[in-house]
Each structure stands twice: as structure tokens, then as C-alpha cells.
Image 1 (cartoon, rainbow over the protein chains, first blue to last red):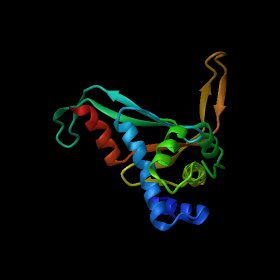
Image 2 (tube, helix red, strand yellow; image 1 turned 30 degrees about the vertical axis):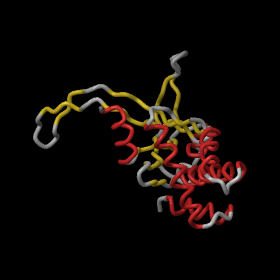
Image 3 (cartoon, rainbow over the protein chains, first blue to last red; image 1 turned 60 degrees about the horizontal axis):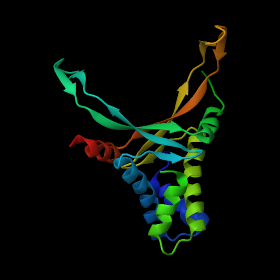
Image 4 (cartoon, rainbow over the protein chains, first blue to last red; image 1 turned 90 degrees about the vertical axis):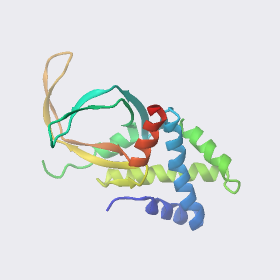
Amino acid sequence: MALTKADLTEGLAEELGFNKRESKEFVDQFFEEMRQTLEAGDYVKLSGFGNFELRDKGQRPGRNPKTGEEIPISARRVVSFKPGQKMRTRVESRVVVSD
Amino acid sequence: MTKSELIERLVDQYDDLTQRDVELAVRLLLDRMIDHMAEGGRVEIRGFGSFSVHHRPARHGRNPKTGESVEIPPKYVSHFKPGKELRERVNLAVAD
């Protein structure tokens, strides 16, 4: 099961005693602050967790996979995430069950 | 924006939360997400994006300095896919 905002909201209520409304608002605002920062063209650096960076991509040729028709892919700005040391180590060191 | 700047911005918005409350809350949110991924799970935040764990099988590599062949063990790496709202808001900011 995926972890969702509802689980995070519950965590704040259970562990820190936030009431339901407070924790829901806080979780929403936490992600909204990051969206606003990235929208404004700034990066987000959360030590241990990771960095959200922006990359500007120029226009490039593309193709409609169904029709084969050539359509240019417009220039765009995209978010890229680089996991931090703590996340990398914890995720990477998971026991590999089979290969 | 760094983690401490994020904490400051959140402190400014909540009169009833102390700096300490916000620090603990931010740490809890980030730790919960890492804990879940460390167990191989996905994190799905609607409007922001999803984090998933991808498996990288073992492969043969080479030490670029010595040219020596080395066995790179299998591992897991985390991956972030921005959600629709984030993608659109970031891109709209430059589209005009």
C-alpha cells in the first residue's frame, strides 16, 4: 500500500497530538510551500531527504507514436529529484530478496 | 529553499505552533516517507508527486581510474515522478 497524505496526517495527530484539522492543514501546507518555491524557480534542499531541482529543456523533435507524425516537443521546465545521503543509504541497503 | 527556511515559512503561518512543534512535524513527515521507502513502498502525494523504489540488478562495471573490472552488486534506488499540478505550475511559470 502506498503511503499517502492521509497516513502523514494521522502520524502528526498520533505522535505530536495535532488535532485532525491542524494536521491535515499542515501536511497540505508543507507540500504547498515546496510547490510555490519550485514554481518561483528556486530549488528545494531537504538535507537527508533530498533535493528538488529544476531543469530547463529546450524544444526537441518528437513523434506521435500512433500516427508516426512529427510534432515538436515544446521547451519546458521540469523538476528533478536527487535523493539525499540518508534516503539513499536506507533505500539502497534493503536486502535484495532475489535477482 | 533549505529545510530550515521551510520550517521558518511554516512557523510564520501558524500562530498556535511553536518553532519546536514545526521542527518535529517536518522531521516526522520526512522520516515517515523515508521509512516507507526503505521498506520498498511507494509514497503518493496527490498534486505533488510520487516516490517509488526501483531495483537495479547487479552489473559489471569498470574502475575508471585503473580500468579494473568490478562487480557492482544489486541495489535499490529511489525515484520521484512529479505530479500533474506540480508539473503544470512549474512549467507554466516559464511558458509565457
